[in-house]
Image (cartoon, rainbow, N blue to C red):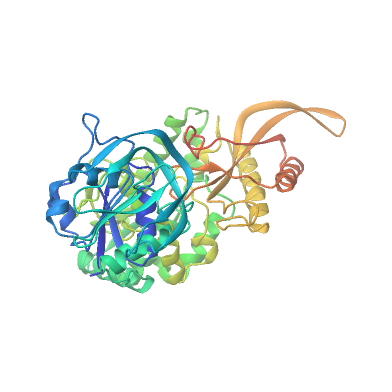
Length: 517
């Protein structure tokens, strides 16, 4: 079992980033709500504990507090921002509102030798209204900034530290190294969270859970379900039946890619269901997005039921749940067996359909999932496929869904993503724009007047959406080069019949969502 770090989440928007940075140091970690039961957190057998930031103030009524077991455990502790303030408040120091808030870039000066921050000045990212006025007894101020005379504290004997800045964000260039020093040097956690160890541990868990029984999986074509399928197939070859439902709401070439990726390894255990006609009939005339989702989910359920019966009604169901799904929906629960009556990816399985879940990706972030997929030999284009919602193009084809409108959307989407890929902007950084985490086209239920060939047109509009994000919980719109947008718009208007206008979505999340429906 890998050494691990427990992270207590006090409500910070960057808590997941802390976990990512620890994982990047090749040390396993998990996020827990700050008030999770002590037994649940300590069941991880952590080598140390990190306390996240929070929008709260330690002195306001009902503010989160430091659970007693944290200090009683004798483990090394690192408090970040609010985490430092709650340590200070609990241990007898003084926290007060600062007359001058500190948001954005700042410089901290290290005041002496310590295991986390060598002497010198460092650019950091601050985001706080309160500050430490007096360190707790036994603690030494270790750094200061222009607005925070105590920007870092430490009790070297007890191995308890606090920093006012945010080492987890990329705006703190040395933050990744600071976190590595804490988890590896101070906590003594072995950096053994590697691809090989991840795959080996997942295979062992699957074999222990499934034994010799058959397993069922719904393959969507997305990276999560694809990697989960590949892992289960490696663990229990010959025991897996994969069902791929072509509902007519797929992106260009999606069905062919899935069949090519799994056809050889799964053979007759890959079942491809052509349900295009059924879905088109069921969705005819429907414009309400929630009704679309219900219809798509219900259709999938019935098809899945029928295929499950053909496969002998396996007790185990593979689901491509990843760690952000777990964090956003509920706290990690290490003690309860997972059984479901709903499938979050497809809108709900029926009440009388019970499965024991096999979730080999449950504690992996998206970048870790992709790395595992490549290590398992999945095609690069499948591993790096853009995120795709369960209802498919139905949530990007606003208004009525018809074959004609879906073809317009498919073509426009392919043009956009092809241009981005040709420019080297998908899923990687460039000098002009951060790597685009998700990009797609949306067909709007809006017609506008245009002029094409000296003739008046009255045709549909396409919206382009591209965002950058590290965790998909927040996202910013991508600052794409103007010439790329111009070239994409020109191609769409010229190559996609029935479209005469292209717009670009410049709304971040929040207030918008990434998808439109």
